[in-house]
Length: 340
Ligand SMILES: Cc1cc2nc3c(=O)[nH]c(=O)nc-3n(C[C@H](O)[C@H](O)[C@H](O)COP(=O)(O)OP(=O)(O)OC[C@H]3O[C@@H](n4cnc5c(N)ncnc54)[C@H](O)[C@@H]3O)c2cc1C
Image (cartoon, rainbow, N blue to C red; front, side, top):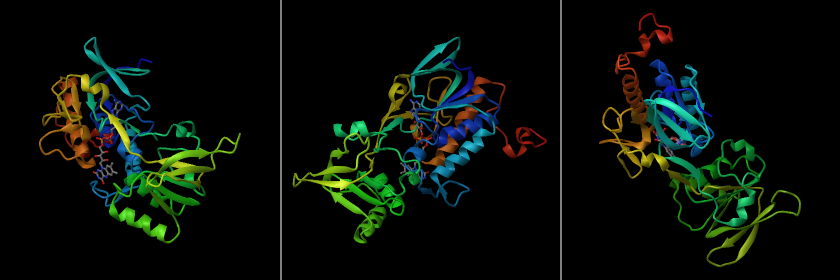
């Protein structure tokens, strides 16, 4: 499918991209987001939707998924399209504009803001071949709604923040909850590990260290597994565990992919930009976690600032008669104020 040309296309619908989309609308530019994931929110949706965030200006505390909802609502004021499940795999130039290419679609655009965070990311899959047929049928590597697991016997595989965060979140929802990890060293916050260990001590949860998935057991013709087989990696013994849901929390693999080939200055998966968020290739700007400049902090708050700078510069590049300085939103006719 070939889409209509837009002034600005934002690669990435994380917090930076969502704010950039709003900002483009406020500046009177046509814009769109193209993102590889199925939903907006980037890392907030994929990695920590239930966690509270405390350092976003104006919100003393806000759950990650609620911040995404608010960012969407802010952007939705200008009715700009967002295209999800679209991974950018190519960049072409034709008739004086760019065309961003995904596996299925083409997105002509006058300018680009790359807000690709840590790159297109996908959950790391379980290495055991026995797991593969059960993805989507009891094995889920992304949790969006913890309520889906109410009353279920849940086994989480992994030893990082996500494993322990979800272990704690599901304590009161799941019928049983166990964490399985290959070692006894965890890459999770001590406080969360301590919270889960306290639940284990109270008989509300189980923790299997030095264990890994060995098999899944399903009654013939049932289409669902009822048990998993765990293997003790030290003792080389196996044991069965009742389970109707397995949540592999093994981290994400991320990839800058094709963006590496666009002639930008990229080191360690970071795009070097100047203080105008220019990448060095005219018409292509970058913002958020994906950029590097002296003093850059990888935070939501700084991503918002980067987005405002990148969009204002991009709008001026596309329409040189439009000023870089946006003026104050509190004075803008677009929001109903008498003066622009
Ligand atoms: C567990 C955890 C807790 C955190 N807590 C905080 C906190 O309390 N406060 C704080 O300020 N920050 C926190 N952060 C960091 C914060 O999440 C990031 O700074 C923020 O997500 C960066 O936003 P972004 O939009 O730049 O990138 P991302 O959120 O990474 O979004 C980038 C988007 O680009 C898309 N994309 C990438 N490449 C492509 C491609 N080729 N084609 C299409 N789409 C593509 C991805 O799919 C993704 O949706 C936390 C991070 C983690 C992991």
